[in-house]
Length: 217
Image (cartoon, rainbow, N blue to C red):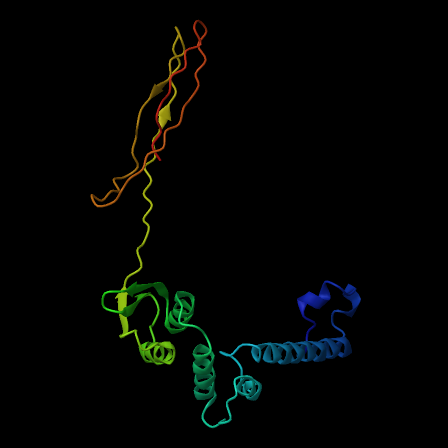
């Protein structure tokens, strides 16, 4: 038995919840909405080279490519190379080339060796063949080549040490006694530990003295 989805039940009176005709109508509405969303997303995909399919002929016409043979991915690669060939050999362009190949960290120039160095993080795959092909399309004659450096992305480790303070009532001046009770022992010699001090104001009946106490976090 077809049931009316909850998202529609919230907008209709209770006495039609079990109406089979209405349930069938809502089922048809759902199918049409899903089909519409799928077609809309398919159209949006044609505006991006990485997802274009039946829109690739328009991309090829824009870049003057007459050979439409090959798979969709091979055709995208031809368009991509044509795009890079039209751009100037600048650091901005080289960064875009590197970002297409993987998780780029930096692009540097070695003027003495006349090479360009691409540095990548290893948290994502690096597509080196595509990188070198795109680079060769851009490379001027005075640049000898490119090198790739791979390294791990540094991680930030946060360490917290909590301090407990116990209030003790005094008959004379209502003294406040701090006592540190560390929760566990978390440290590493190679890590920098920062401290943050907090000031607590204490009111005394005679001189209203201010005693700063430190609370490490």
